[in-house]
Image (cartoon, rainbow, N blue to C red; front, top):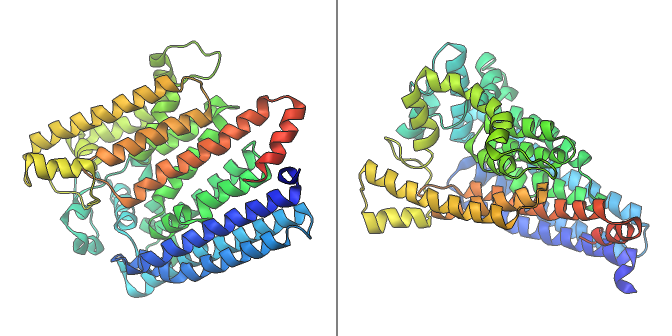
Length: 432
């Protein structure tokens, strides 16, 4: 049957590569009009490369009927590696060098904030209690200079710049990049999916704009995402390691906490322990490591890590993406609602998101990495729609989680099927 023909399946995979690269080229071209210098520069550098990648993928698809399947897979992998170098690593090197030569406008505020916070910690100051001491932050707005909206472990990635400020490649994005590439490489190699799905994981995580743009612009979201994927891959076969990896992500940024809490709520098969016991066992370590930062100056920690990211800080957040929550704030409550009113409305919206999340947990009681990823993606999507403050980059999280859920679900099916069915499903998976 034609559907089961190996060459047809590999041709379909290469054609889908072409579609992804073409869509990436269009997206990259649209970013050339961005007001942000790193994003605009990335768009100018990468859209022609994505377009060439789409042409190359079409050529590989055309050759699938005359070349061996292993050769086609090798060509697809080589094309992805070349694109990774062209759309992620090369632009990263360029923006880092331009920052050293021309100034901090080639770095997003997130990079400067992490580096400034690391300098304060090394000098014995609390980054949550004082304005970040960095001249380059003054032109970014008072809110950027006044707040460090991350958890304590994030400062580690700014330490090289704090120690060696004159060395170009101590830029925090380089440190984020090395860590992200390492975590993603380990996650892809450990994942029990087909070779075609491994390539798809790498594409979504690093090669497409969902990874490449994150790496070049700031890097911290890509690191959190790579830790989340690594945890999902390892959870099923090494529960303690999976929770430890997620705990590291939870010590970096609040965006890792939805998956962290969902994983703690969904026990693995055969685990009859209560939710509170799992929360204490696996969630206690990250909380204990955060406690010193909280006790240092509790009010400032709460203001920086909770209130400000939700748009409830003393100063307005620079994140201005329109959402249902922001529309509610501006139209129903008024353009200048009081802080207590904003807190009350945000608490109500957050409670709504939690209710949706609980409903998803009830609907997906089966405990698996794919169900955890799917539940978290739904929860984060609802939260991003109704929160009063959001950024376009945050949408990478639910998108990546949905892709991972789909690929890991197929891995689970292959693992539990009988040998004959597993072989059949393995051949079908190559067509994705």
